[in-house]
Image (tube, rainbow, N blue to C red; front, side, top):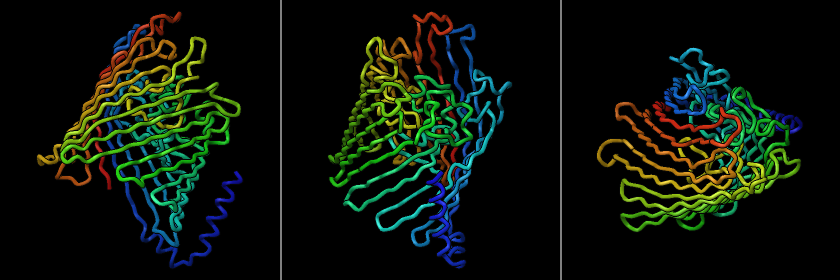
Length: 447
């Protein structure tokens, strides 16, 4: 509360130094932008855990966002954005998750709207400060804009570029508003290792809540972040991030990527790691997870392909399932080996491999890009979720019609095999397997 009062006084003090003509210019020269999105999804599920073994759930929504940002005066500007999602052609009862896909909607699969962004921004020389509701795209805290409405953060973010070729970021996040994709989970181990909350937060999409309350159901002092990104060597990028989630964990993320130009062939390599440990009251339990990944590939004209591998530290027989897993409760999922849906990569003891290839048809006169991939997850017996290996294959077709500028049409599909397998649990309703075929059609019009 004290931080909010101080921030409000700073903002009011800044405005008092701007005369009416200048204030009018800030708003009259502001910029309006937005997006109109239609999203349709259909998943045919093969679930052998119960009598209702085969079902198809669908979802259709239209929405998007409208954003306004003022012009800058003496480094100061303001921005706000309103987001909405509205369902149509939904089966009844629409709150039945075997009939209606929950990842496009709000509570009980209803339509909803949210003021997702409302911030002030101040820039001076090589330093920028942004405070308020905003989207973040960092390795372990991100917007994860995979469905209709992304994740949002209430945060204070300072970036500085005084050091040549280096960007320093300092931030503190106090609240989190889960987007619609987070409703794919109802809490538990798969959710907290897949980018979302350990508790069931399917009804929290319309609210900004305390970071700890969202992640583990406990109030905390938020998440403090420090990072440095270096690009001083041609074609090399190195970044290091530290996330201190008070009374939950300390997570360190590092990544290095390098690309080469060998004429018609342009190889690239990249590596990443995550190290986590519990801190303070350890609300998420005893944590000591370690993850590493690597990727190598090449671009040859319009064709690009890569292979990636990753490994997460494993648990002993008596460990809690989260101990050597990697938890990421606030939308962050940077793993090279993640699938379109399958995010088993951070479960303890997982060795994952992904192969992907894409082709851009622009040189042939068609603004179409196609992507194909295959991912395999070798699961350790103490991962805490599934008792067998999992795999996923998928495609992504992205098309920009010439007749309508700024229109994107996207057709995606993913096919999960043994996403979940359980044969030894005493609860017979949990025994069996889950897999599916899923198709998505997305239309994005940006302005």
